[in-house]
Length: 254
Image (cartoon, helix red, strand yellow):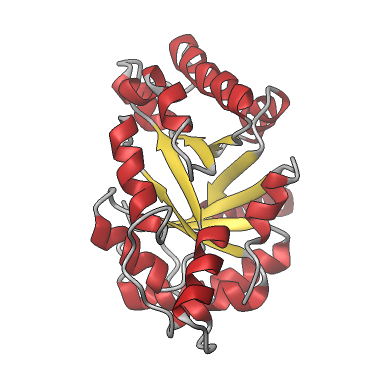
C-alpha cells in the first residue's frame, strides 16, 4: 500500500504546498499537479459539482502519481466522509467546524476501531485493489488517512484548543473568506480576521499541530508561512491556469 507522503512531511516538521481542484473533472489534473511539484491537492466537493465517480477517478490517478489527494467534503455527516475515503481519498478536510463534539464525530467517521467507527471496506479503490485482510487495512487506514478541520467560524476559533486536542486531528486549515464573513468584515486582510487567524496559529503551535490557510495571494501566503503555518494552499485549478495565461498575454502584448 502507498504511504501518505503529505502526512509524513508534516510529521517531520516540513512545509507542504498544495492547491484546490474546484472545476476540472479530467483525472489528468492530478498528474499535472504532481508534475508541477505540488505536495497535495484538495478536491472541493463542498462547492464543486463533482460526482462520486469523478472523485474516485481523480483519487486513483493521484495515488498512481504520488501526490496526496484529499477531499473537502460538504459537511461532517458520516456518509460524505466514509464514501469519500472508500473512493480513494487519503484524507478529508471538513468545513464549518464549530465544536469539539463535531470534531470527535469527524474522527470517528474517518478511523476504524479502536480510534473510530468507520464501516469496513477493504477491497476497492481505497486499497488499490490489493488483497488485504480487514486487520491489515484497518491498521493502514488509521495510520495513513488524514483529518483536517477547516476553521472558518468564530465559534471554532474560540474553541480551538479543545478542537485541536481531539486525538486524530492532523491539521487545522483556515478558511479566511468565510471567517471574514462570520466576523462581519467581508475582508480577509482585516485586522480582526488576522487576529483570529493568529489565535489558531498560536494554538496549533502550542499543540504541535500543523496549521495552514488557502488564499490566492502569494504575498499573504508567504507572510503566514513566516508566522508559523506549514500547510500552505495556493489558488485553485482554473485560477492557476488563468493567472499563467494572463501573465503570458501581458508579456506578449507589451
